[in-house]
Image (cartoon, rainbow, N blue to C red):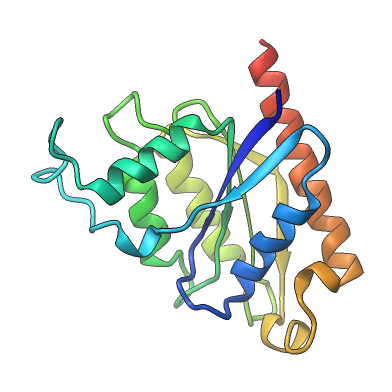
Length: 187
């Protein structure tokens, strides 16, 4: 049985370098792991307790919760918007944090990676995502990190999957997340 890793991308832009990074992760998954790129974050309404009512949760939010609930681990890809996490990714984390104490992220291994144009590769956004996921109940893998600076120039003509250094680092991230999820499943 393979370990299922759900990939959530914090950029909705079709040419997003973080989306390309997630596509590379799908290809680089080790044997025994499957990385599934989630489609549909743009359809999830902003979190609101008034609409998060059992039996009438918006369909897009219910699908997100189902996908995360079925996954053994979660891999977040985040750009950095104005020094922090994009709203679409924070919104996904908010939906996945409920119901309180039993959300779809509870006790799941989660790794956060990403790329951004700046010289630090989006580390502020990644740190904010780790903080939010940890508070939401996820088991944040603090030692599994990848921040790729200069995305606009680095990936101008090269897909991240074709960048040997990035591919090797990303393959290591996915393998380590797979290892954590496999160990947790065996426990």
